[in-house]
Image 1 (cartoon, rainbow, N blue to C red):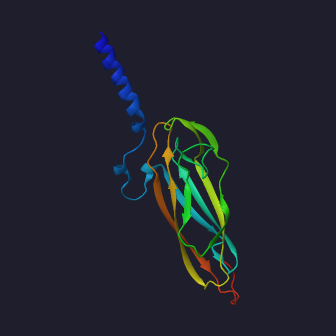
Image 2: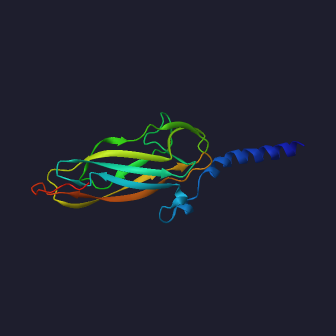
Image 3: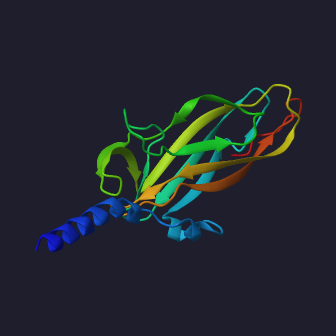
Length: 182
């Protein structure tokens, strides 16, 4: 009888120790291009699409999550070690003005991580202004960057994932009389 209890107790300890490892997808699932299996799609918008040197433009990142899934806020909850979403722009010619703005995150208990976290669900818009240097040449500039995120559904979390994005910004010649396209 004592042997049976020891065996049962060891099995229970093993299960409890191994259980958190079951909450995350494996690295092998993250090869290839982003798809719906990553539970998120992105749309990038630049407003306005054409600027003059010295102007500001706004970069908007729209993320759409699968039903029941969430990502983490750009800021971690105090004392938390969750994985905040990050948005990075590769081109340092355009100077970011202030921090990224995000909608008010919801604080929820994340069952996959077993703790309270700041999250976003459904459709989320992140935005940030950038300054166009006064000495930049006219032309089309490809703005590239990435979104680093982790998606969870309260049962499992993906491993941190990086999704790349790009869009074009037109810098107009300030001496030419041209209408700015919208």
